[in-house]
Every structure is written in structure tokens, then in C-alpha cells.
Length: 133
Image (cartoon, rainbow, N blue to C red):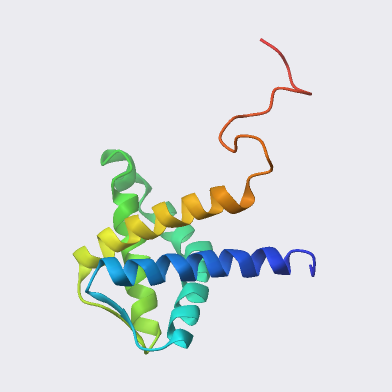
């Protein structure tokens, strides 16, 4: 368990950095203190790990009908949920949370790709040790 703690901290820092960048891009996303930024990153990680899968399961028919577009709505709801729970984190409305969650996902993806790549291209499946077609 202690081996994965630095990895957890790195993910937390990536999420906090993404939220920090988003607060400069969108004027409707504000943090009053650095503490509220890191607490928001922590709670957003927990919400995405615990609440989001439940919401995805409950809204699966709607997600299928909208070809996955409703997942963006769920991401925005996770941002609004965290903003409601953290005193220093404010989001002005749903559409701000909607577009901010897209930017957080994009920034986090590219930061994770830069930091977690093992030297080879991270999006290419390795072919050694598998079945060749």
C-alpha cells in the first residue's frame, strides 16, 4: 500500500494542477485558497472513483441513447458536487462546470501521458508476448 502512495500523490497533483489551470481559463471557476484547491482535487478524485460509476450505471440507457454524450453531463455534475462540498471552491453554473470538466479531463490526460509514459508510446499496445495475427 505504501508503494502506491507516491502514485496517488502524483495523481492528486495532476488533478490540482488541472483545476488550477481551468480557474484561469474560466472566470466562473474560482478557488479562495490553495487548501480549497487541493481539497477539491482530492474530493474530485473520490467522487470520480465512487459516485461517478454509480451514476453511470443508473443512467446507462440515457448514455446509450445519447451515444455517450451524457457522460459529459455526469462529469459536470461531479464538478458541481465537489464545488458544493468545498467551501472555497465556486462554480457559477452548469455550463461553466460542463466545459471546465472537459478541460480538466484534457489537461489531466496530457499531463498523465507525459508523466506516466514508460518510454514507449503510451497509446500503442505492445505486441510481444501476445498472439500474433
